[in-house]
Amino acid sequence: MTNKEYLSQVYHLELKIKQLKVRSEEFERLSNTVPGSNYDGIRVDGTHNQEAPYVKWIVKKSEVDNKIADLKKELERLKVEILQVIEKLENEDHKNVLIMRYLDTQTWEKIAENLYCSISTVKRWHNKALELVTINM
Image 1 (cartoon, helix red, strand yellow):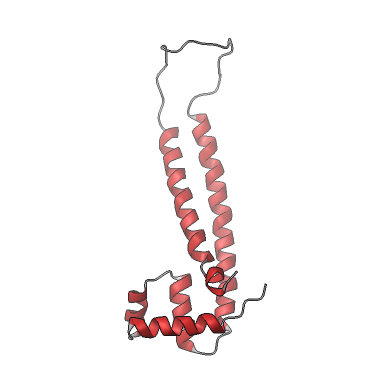
Image 2: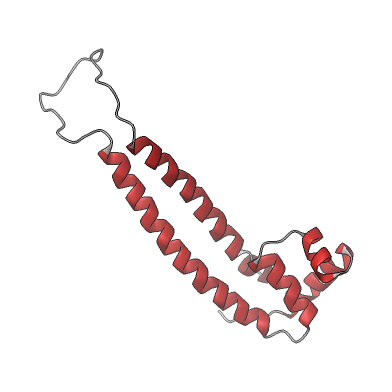
C-alpha cells in the first residue's frame, strides 16, 4: 500500500458510510409503506407468511445501521492513526496540506485558499509530504 492509498482510506470509508446511509433511508421509506394484497398470482405453497411485509425492511435497516455504527468507530480510529502519522512530519505546511486533503477531504483549490498560496505550491508540498511520510505497518 502506497502512502497515498494509506492516507486515502478516510475518504473511501466516509464514502462507504454515505452510501450505506442512503440505503438505510431507503429501507426506512420502504418500512413505512404497506403494500396491498396481490390476487393476480397463483399460490403455489399452502403456507401463509405470518410476517408483515414491512418487517424485512425494518430488519435490513437495522443491519445497515449497525454496520454504519461500526464503520464510524473504525473511521475515528483511522483518523487518529493517520493524524499521528502526519504529526511526525517536521514541516507545518506539509502537515497542513495532508490534514486538509486526507482528513478534511478538501479540494486543491480550497487548500490553496486556506493556506494563502497557489495550487501548484500546494501540490508541490503534497508530493514532498507523501515522500516524507512513514507508515508503520
